[in-house]
Length: 412
Length: 93
Image (cartoon, rainbow over all chains, first blue to last red; front, side):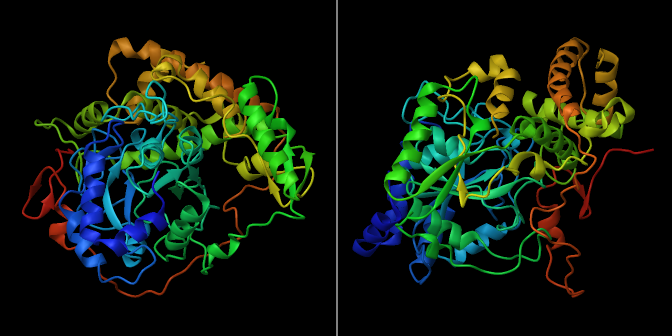
């Protein structure tokens, strides 16, 4: 894998133009289907400009998940319905990256509209896990994590609604973060479940990830949920855990957990203990409800967020128009994949069924309450991320939806 | 319990054209997910305040100032069908 410090050294020894062209060569020679669009024209131009930048990422190549708007670079959400869409504006995070001198080398693969945990639902084919090409890279930000693991780029952006940065980072052996909601502006992130999702940084190590996080975090008035204030998160890079208290939520460990996964989490806890931290078990009794609550909220929001895709202002349009209802319905039936349709249908049902849906299905459920209350207040909590090792390709598709439900039932 | 007739209706609401032979499959899948949701009935949420934001934020305002926006060409640039600088939609009436 490539680090930022190594890239900065390459930049000092050669030029941004050369570093970027080598990066594009690596991507094009890649065997894991990590990219949907390679920015072959705009990246060299950006490299020339970044040569004069004094920013912390001047000349450093970065891959962007394909649901984050990039002005002039095709952005598909891995869907047929946005196959030819070229955003006329940059997302807030892209503006910040450009100010920092980073060079966008292309758009990486994902589950269609970020709906999945395997990167197999992409219209542009599945991404393979670079460690074992018979296995999935996780999802939905599978391209972002796999391109780091494959050593194609040093940095990538993903997005995380219910585990979509953390799951692929784990499956690909890289480092990813879902920031606290509101820390990063969602302006320009194509919405799936807007009350849950955040853009998240992915890198090969914690220091690089923090550097990237520092660049993209910050207030943006165009996202009303964005939190005011700026912080230097690199101050948190302290090589000392003495006195830190760790909570291990016992509700995450139990039936259906792969022993290898459980062992590896405990190895991490004990390693921290050796370094001076202490740990205790904590109870998070509502953990088991978190996934169902997440699903109700995410599906409902998806059904309204994806209502905008009707082929009028952007995206797929069929040759012949009929009456408006038939026209929209045919475009959407042909443009969306199966998983996306299923979630839209479920959300539409949840929002429309009225008395048929128990009251707890309504948004009166406090998702935060359900998922994060615990019996003690340690400094940090260490849950486990997925109950099993990453699965083989296509297993998810045939077993849906039960596999996904099992995966999340432990608190994704 | 979602029936094939329900699926047809939901598809109509969601503007998703359904083929007759898909209805049963969708009904089965939706029912299986709804069964899973059923466990939420066990949770007593009467005392729980709804969460609107994980941090305590409310009433976000901005200055009422005119700022730059997309030009008409930029705004319509991705539209598959346009006419005289407008988006062209199918007939409504």
